[in-house]
Length: 270
Image (cartoon, rainbow, N blue to C red; front, top):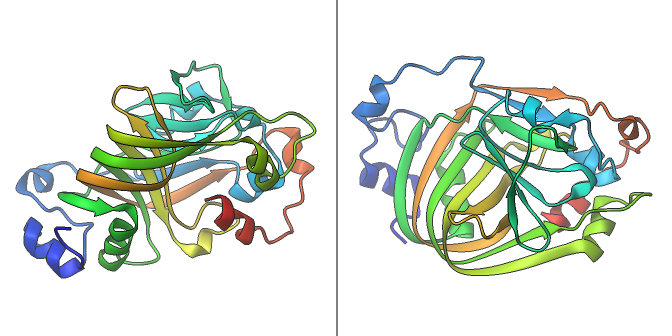
């Protein structure tokens, strides 16, 4: 591994900022770019994670509408039919059989997190596991903030999953995944990782900590990431200025129990 601490990160990649602050411009090219606007630097979310955990598997937001909110994001589709990945403005579905499909604007989502991605900093590393990478980022990034993270590179191994579609009456997400989760053990794959690092105070609304989805460059594999070993990885970090949540507009949202503490369920499936 190239580095394990914020100090190593700052010295190796030449950041001209105080130690440990990744979210400053690290190159003259980045510094010359126009500042991000509040409109584009907010994360938009449709529905909340506890509703999905409780079984609100349908929503009314079309993917066409979703794409007006950003060009980078993750989520799922109605009936929890696979994993949703938004990369460079296109929406992809990773299905339970491992196939990838670019989705039409009229399709809908039951939950999604999206923003217009514009990196504040970037760096490249070699030979690092997901666990070590997450520890390094947590040591370097100021806490209590929101971050969008895009990573592109080569992975010697990567473990991901996708759920099969649910049937009504819908169970909880934990119970659905217990019978309808399909795991993919990928080897020597090139692709992009899309995701977020969010603080603990957003629990019940979103997923605290790291949440990543994968899309292979050849669009033949992907899914919700459990683990990986990266041979070489370019990491871009985009600090998020704010956060907008739209309540799920489907009638099922009003029928699920949102009073229960589902954090233990979330940890098991994430």
